[in-house]
Amino acid sequence: MATLSRIWSATAAVVVVTAFTPYLPFARLLGFEALPTPFYPIIALIIVSYIAAAEITKRFFYRSARLAATTVA
Image 1 (tube, rainbow, N blue to C red):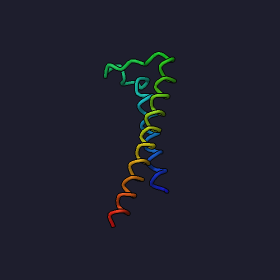
Image 2 (image 1 turned 60 degrees about the vertical axis):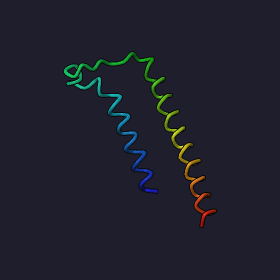
Image 3 (image 1 turned 45 degrees about the vertical axis):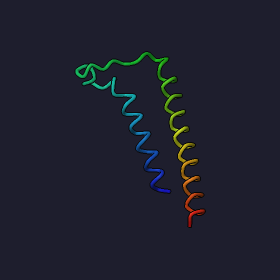
Image 4 (image 1 turned 60 degrees about the horizontal axis):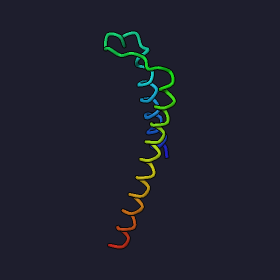
């Protein structure tokens, strides 16, 4: 279970760093500009939806893989 916690922590860290990158001092040098504020809730919804869809898909995949392994053996 500790591995799952580390994965979620790493994912959250990447999301936070990505969200705040346009506000860092060197962002203008890289051509980054801050998004308008209304975009952030939309992006958050897209990210949460993506994570939920990936988790649901993984559960279906591993459940079917487990069933296939038990019927073959």
